[in-house]
Image 1 (spheres, one colour):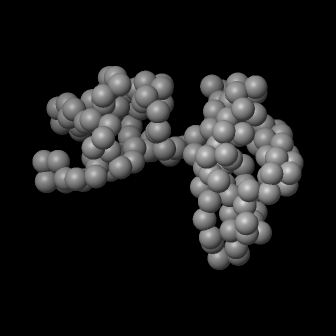
Image 2 (cartoon, rainbow, N blue to C red; image 1 turned 180 degrees about the vertical axis):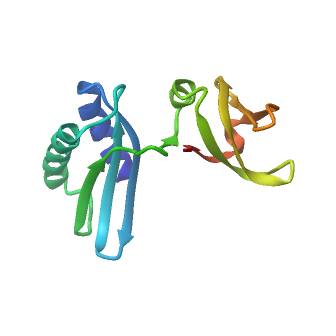
Length: 147
């Protein structure tokens, strides 16, 4: 179900020169929520979110993919967005990030530093002491921009 939502959303977004950052579908206090985080080269505004929301609502009503009643939210990923693709890692090179690993490295699972060079295998993290930590993508649980 999520794959079909992602596929349709990416089609809408590519025509608007926007990208799908993340899709969440979860039960929260007031019921089920389908959340789409979108972004663009110059950020994202309310108008873009509203347009995507309208088109997604039509698609979801017609396709009837989601069995539960739900609320659709379309928004910016925010200042501490998750990095998902190699393009994200390249785009945000030089920015401060928080990296959570699947397994401890050097006795810890969470590192904060500046994002260095990235390639198809992984990236470098420049730590506060200016040392460089090479990290492979398969070691990463989540990478977020950090303030």
